[in-house]
Length: 114
Image: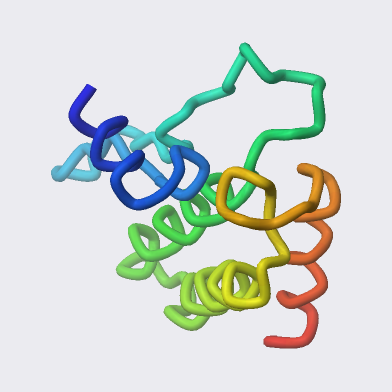
């Protein structure tokens, strides 16, 4: 509940990544948006995809000690930040894009930031 509240304070559950970590790294860790699968809006093309991208960036940062290039997480985070700055986002954070369009906007930026 606290993670959901803190995400809402930042502006949207659609912006909050989460991680369930095994600090020993003996067992797998889980990375996902705080909102989970958002079943209440599934299939409506209105979910904010940014938390999924930011969760992937968190996972890549977690994997850095195992050889993942540190730049990968930064590029994803920069792509999402750029979309937010240009209001290329879903309505919950001030944009007018659908889930698919917001996802495409991030992917487009990922190609230009490599």
